[in-house]
Length: 270
Length: 102
Image (cartoon, rainbow over all chains, first blue to last red; front, side, top):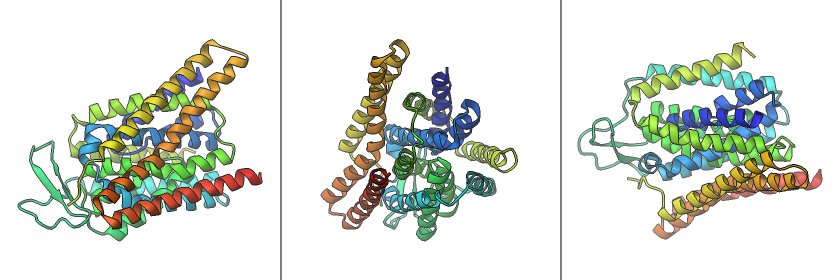
């Protein structure tokens, strides 16, 4: 029964994760922790494994291949993994309650940023020759035309990636909750590119957290993890099917609402 | 300008890894529902094998990108991939030391 429940939770987390470029852990951790009754350590461990599953699945989809900026992901991975390793050190000193409040505040901040930048497209119109080393061109599915973007504020993106790595390990999430809004709102990357690139980053970022969870004895229920991973695989496909039918503005509003709910959950209802 | 597609060989590795993971996890789950006793250990072993392969995929992904950038002679991105692998290696070694110490 618990396995079926984690499978369904994985479906939900995987679909939302694929839809928004998140790992989906932001939903899975509370479900496993409160719904199934797993200790928070075990819930975050299983969540991080599903993040890896979602990340790899997204990289195989047509949207993932078309929109992900592989080189930007590679550069940011270095800093997100460093942050994730730092998070494993911090876990020795932070209480679970403190970690949850930090995460809740971060999610609330990001939701506000997303709402304040709803109509910002981050594309360069006309003939653009210099996109920089980490810029790119993609086809805008809404208009059918090719749009260009240039990465701005690389140091900011690097800093956010590092912070996302820390959050990933501490809260058992992919870190996309930070990376997607930062790339989109502050660094000039279109939403779909930010989501696909984030998906490529979060799988690698989750790796140190999974190892740490295993070493701490938090990964002791392989069948629950298997149920969640298989559910996330099904959910990822579902999320991309839905994602192709919604517009960027709707995607941003939905993401902001999701983040607000998660933030209030961690800040006021825990 | 960046090439916004992942290397085909890398996609093949990820696809094969995910399919093997899904098969291993699925068989482990089904077995765990229909068998008991010593056979249940085999079901758990299948699930563990699937999880281990899944967790290894990010490392394989970075190695794939490293090989691709090496072929393109984009040394700055080769350096980034090596840095990522060094960090992932550090995480592995640190946890192995922890496990052995415990």
